[in-house]
Image 1 (cartoon, rainbow, N blue to C red):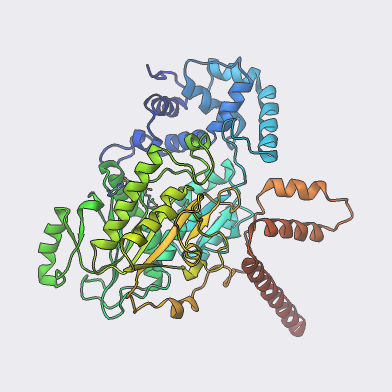
Image 2 (cartoon, rainbow, N blue to C red):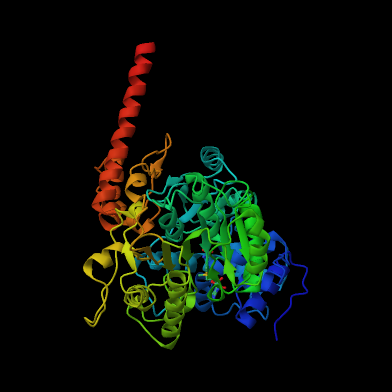
Length: 559
Ligand SMILES: C[S@@+](CC[C@H](N)C(=O)[O-])C[C@H]1O[C@@H](n2cnc3c(N)ncnc32)[C@H](O)[C@@H]1O
């Protein structure tokens, strides 16, 4: 039976939710959102639960190491333990028997936590409960549909320091992943100014939109085929708006592109709708609870007179508007690239791992990609992505599609990630896989080396797609690395304490502070960043120095 706390503890609601999650094996969102997509608890309770779940592996270890801590109400024990040791206040409000137990062991618990943190920096150990192999910082995407980038950055800097700029994704900031920072961000999340989106998951929309002119003579809409909860959808909407795509409109009255966002699950689609209402105020996203596999690319339904018919047909989940020219396909996957995915931590980490579940997922992914490439005759770009690290769900699916479509589609290398050094894998057994050139087109992200969750992206284009604008637009593409705001630095693993620790221990005290930090910089660069980025960083740094010198000169001149 699920213990339901009737105590007067201010944490009782969070404890009850956690107990339900653990007894039903459901996720937090499935438990707290109603089928209409409404939050059934307070935002504070929601935040408390997500913080506990985020740190569950550490709390599990603590409880294993201090075995005499026991409580019938497991949820309450975890919340209070989190509040006492990890939460921003490091104290427990209210009273009660569990609090008394914890307070009696406070010093031991603090010592154990220190040991756990130190050992997790030394060696990742997969036989133990999950430990993060590298530091994945908190990524914060400024939602440019609601907020002005530089104003939000300024506001954030008044509360949180340091903040770095991601070198690859525009409008993406990097901060230390501490509970204090998470709490400070909450207000910005609630006002929809920011989205807490991991770096690698921003790659999908970036690759779909970047360099995509579509056929300039006609309007172009987008389809996000598996959209909920909508991080990529809202990113896509922001990018589409900022690049002013779909400007030759004869389809929708506002002259902007529409993003059709589908999800098969009624609950997740309700969540998607709710989030899009806040994140995309220009209403460029239209959400539908339909099965992507039961939809088809429409043709000939384009005039305004036909719009009603189109909507009716669309509502039946059959035909999608013909203006859709590009599809983002981010289907359900094993999630094996996510470092927070606890169940996967115990699986074989070999990227060639395969079992019945992975085979079934791979078959579904192939089916969905086949549908996107074969049943939408007017679509000329499809971006396929997963947060899986397994070959079978990534390169394996792409190889099958290329074989199936026999020359109709080709892989293209996304020019926005030209410098990204980690690319596709070949089959382990030497069997027929992607060619060398094809493997170089796809993007892989390694959670242990790239300071972001594991990910895979492939960009497919119709072979006869002549209207490709990639080359023209790539030269005008600006990431933050090119337009670094005054006083800001690019992120290159400054939050990785293991690097800091090793830099400090090798410091024989004679090195100046400046030298130390450049040493640290060089180490982290060597480990994680390709030569291209290094050059770019150097150039940005050189430009910054020049700007400072110029300022100095002007100051002297005016004095
Ligand atoms: C990996 S999640 C998508 C995450 C999302 N792109 C984001 O960034 O927030 C996959 C989603 O696909 C949905 N899905 C699975 N099969 C589907 C189908 N046949 N048609 C539409 N949606 C589907 C699932 O309900 C799930 O919400």
